[in-house]
Image 1 (spheres, rainbow, N blue to C red):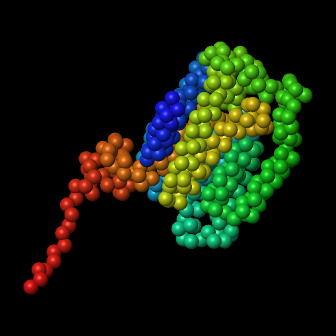
Image 2: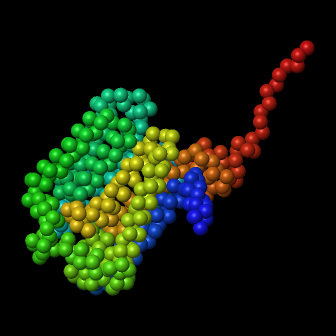
Image 3: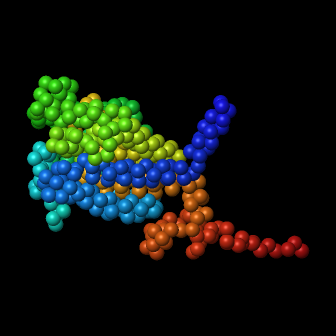
Length: 432
C-alpha cells in the first residue's frame, strides 16, 4: 500500500513537471471559476433581479454577455506573443487614466459612497477594473526595460517612472473614494518591487508609505473608520454597520458541510446586501457548504501556484514580473474578498475575481488569465512542445496579422521549419 502511494505521488510530481502544466492549470482554473461564477450569479441574483426588473434572469444575462465578450478576448490574449503584451501596457494605462479622470467628473455612485462607475453610450463601466491589468503590464514593461538597459542599480532608477505612474493611478482611484481598488493597485506595486529585487530598506519604506496612506484615507472619511472598526464586533450595531457582515456569517453558518443546495439560499431573499457581487462567497457557503468554499479557496490557491510557477521558470524579465503582478492581483483580491465575508478583514467592496457579478470586473480578469496563459507558453520547453503541434485558427490569424512569434519553428502546415530545412554545406577546396 505504501509503495503504491509513493508511486502515485511520484507520478503526480512527474505530471506537474511537464512544460505545459502551468498553461493547462491556468486555463482550467479560469474556466472552472468562471463557470461557477455564472451558476452562482444566477442563483444569488434571481430575487433582486425580479424585484428590480421583473425578470429573474436580468443580472444573469448581463453576466453571461460579459463572459461571452471576455472568452474571445481571453483566447486572443493567450495567443499574443510576449513582445505584443509588452507594448500593450502603456496604451491600456493611458486609456485607464483617461476613463478614471472622466469618472471623477461624470461618474455615478449608485448609493455606494464611491464614484466608481461611468456611463458610456448606455453601458456602465468601472474603469478601475481594467486599470489593474494596465498597471501590471505597464509596470512589468517599465522595469524590464530598465533592467535590460542596466538602470536598476540605484533606487531612483528603480522608482522612476514606476512610482509616479502608480501614484497618479492610485490618486485617480482614490478621488472616486475606492479604497479597496487602491489597495489592490498598491499590492501590485509592492509585488513588482519585490520581484525586481528592490533593496530591503526601500521595500520596507514603501510598505510603510502604503500603510500610512491607507491610514490617512481611513481617518479623513468617517464612514471608512466605522467600516474598519465594525468588523471587530458587528454585534454592537446589527441593524446598520454590522448588518452585512453578520448576515454573511449567517449564510456561511447555515450552509454547514454540504450546503442547502443550489438556489435554496435564504439570505438572498432581501437579507444579505449585494449577494451576487461583494458577498457571493457567502451564498456559495450557504448553498454549497464548507465543501464548496474550500473548493473555491483551493482553485485560487492552484491559480496562485501556476502563476508563480510561470515566474520561477521564466527566463525573460518581463514574463517574470508580469506573471507575479497578475497572479498577486487576482489571488490577493480573492482572499481579501473571502476575508471580508468570513469577518477577518474590514468590508472593502471589491469583488471575487471571475465569480462575482459585474462585467467591468469579469472581462479584464478573463483577459489577465489569457495573458498568464500566454506567459506560460513563453517557457522554452513549452515553446518546443507547442511547436510540434499544428497551429490553431487563432495562431494562423495572428500570423497573417504579423503578431505571431517567429521563434516557434513552425512551417506553413505546422511542421518544424528547422526539421525540414536542409543543412547547408560549406564548400571547401580540395587539398592539392
